[in-house]
Amino acid sequence: MGDNVKEVRVGLAGYGTVGKSVVTVLARNADVIARRSGIHLLVTHVGARRGAPDLAEQGIKVSQDVFEVARDPEVDVCIELMGGVTTARDWIEIALANGKPVVTANKALIAEAGSPLIAQARQVGVPLLFEAAVAGGIPILKALREGLSANQIEWVAGIINGTANYILTEMASGRTFSDVLLEAQAAGYAEADPTFDIEGIDAAHKLTILASMSFGVPLSYRDVYVEGITALQSEDLEYAHRLGYRVKHVALARQSEAGIEMRVHPTLIPCDALLANVNGVMNAVMVQGDAVGSSLYYGAGAGGMATASSVVADVIEVARHSGLAIEQTVPPLAFQDAKPIQMVSIDAVCSAFYLRFQVRDKPAVLAHITEMLGEDGVSIDAAIQKPVHEQTDLVSIVLLTQAVTEAVINRVIARIEALPEIGAPVTKLRVLSL
Image (cartoon, rainbow, N blue to C red):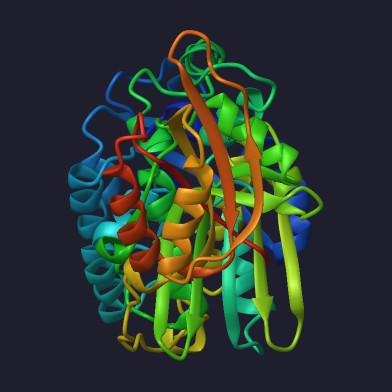
């Protein structure tokens, strides 16, 4: 190790898949990290509730009380990889109170409780960074914090949950949601309790962070409109494809004169769009800036090594900036301050819509539906009508509308569902054109 290489001691809380990958990356790539940064990152203390005999054999201190790491005076930088909100928040507060910079991959914690932690870090004068909290190994937050800092960001849209994307990719071939979910759990792509992934909560946490960094607004997870993918049927993916679209679970934040809209839901995207072709467990984020135009960031959104890549990059940034006043570093949320802006409710959002009606086979029912849509100013772009289903005696009618507000389409759907010809609730999906 050269004389000009500085040693930085790292403490880690959480020794699961990502924690083990962080230790591996730091050991395996020590030389290239030192050559790039002039820093030797050395793991000296790990908090692991179940113990970690493999680390103890390497001479690394292991504590089953994870809070010992946050208080250790021999640790220079702390990494939180436990997950959850309550214990992780307490741990980070203690680390910051002890004057230690913190790196975390905890998107739920940052989205729901990040503001007071960032304020504490600023008051103490140390960084709090969280690149790995959004899109795993894709350096999208560094792009927003630094590479795109000359731009007014107009919108950011992404496929940022690999589990949901894997399920929809498989359903596009005609498979059912339940079958694919079981397969995803067996393959380790989905948790035993997949609620956060399939109900959109995980994506909403990530979108909260993206929106704050894009527009300079406070973290506001409660303002995100969220829909999951559990109600989707494979036939809707088939109809969408016939109309020239693919169905993806999209997170979108957009700024306009009316304010900022933040929404996560299943969305029809034109087949030739870049996001429509992000498949399997991969993630992608598109950003529209006024100077650069559109840019796309694609890669592995989860997994131990991919996440470790972002965690270690944050540790390197912290180590490089040690000794600088906090005002001389890049703010964790990209802006020096966060200014509240009006949030646009989902009812006011304007979109084209995919509508699937299940109707009893009676004369002129399609004409009746289109007439009722027309009465509310809803125009039709395309239509598909399937033969009568033998088991239910119902006909599926699929309509693609032109753009209209959510409030209008909900009002007309409620009127149509009251018709005696309608045999089931109307399926409604939004259409996104980027």
